[in-house]
Length: 217
Image 1 (spheres, rainbow, N blue to C red):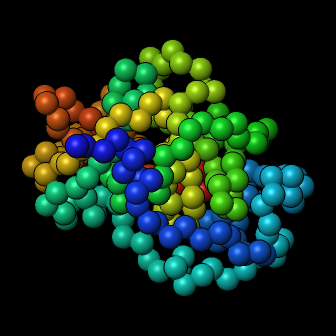
Image 2: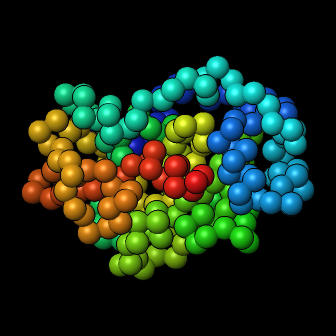
């Protein structure tokens, strides 16, 4: 029996540790300084997220260089992907970038943030930005309201983010010859690093790494 994406991620042990009081990663600090501004401390306190105002050294886990997502995909003979929909368009991301899939919950709004960052949520004590994929990928054939769907929770380069999608679909196993690189796609190609072939269709592989770098720069 094939597991649903939700069942698959619920069965994994990602050893997600609660944030230690008074510590943020450098990526979290960069995000907060850029998007939270002077209201940072008050907003975090209202959400139950504890952390000092002073920069703390990153943990050993965060200082280890993380191999690029695309490098891993190009090297492996077979990769597992999770598929999801935005409008009538399906995309995939590799499961090794994903921690879990959760239902939509209303984020705390950030008035100065662009439309593709709808706010932040408190997930196990960590500052978790919510990225609206239909906006950042410039997918326009969307009918469902933004207040529905699911979050695909990823953690890359020291930042935990929730990718807001319309519907999580299924799991795929892709061989290396099922993947294509350097091909143009009809969504924003800045965030699509390749294509996966499946039953005659081409599904865009969304680069979580590129999204994290973009919202932090």
